[in-house]
Length: 207
Image (cartoon, rainbow, N blue to C red; front, top):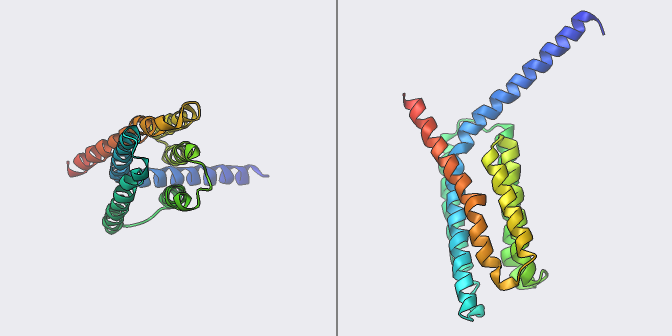
């Protein structure tokens, strides 16, 4: 390779790297608005887990599916409405944003299978359900942190994985309580930080 070709190759590589960084930064400004999804789903799962734990303590196990059957469809409907609003506000969809959305679509489908399909088929035993869900959500949170280069999401994923490991070591009837605890630092706090960052960016834009 000649000196001129080597210089051109380095220049092209630096240009591509700069374009990727700019794309990630633009995507961050778009995706950061989606902290509302973390707060929404984190709050719903937190509430569902607490109600399920209370029903278990009251020995009302036949009713433990009720909070999930009510709250999860509500979350799905609100999420669809939010996505429509964000789609109208966003002028473009980058490859990074598409990757981010694909990760959460995959996690959402896996969550649906575990919560509803497994409740019919009983393929996975009850004691395995919440650890698996915590692992799945942890993958989504950690992967999102890797894609968007957000440390808070990476740490959140570690909390969720730690919760899953803890659930594997304690009796089953404590799983929902543990899930309700780890969902706060693993999911809701990162969502709050994203939401706060979005408001900060909005104020800077107005100025």
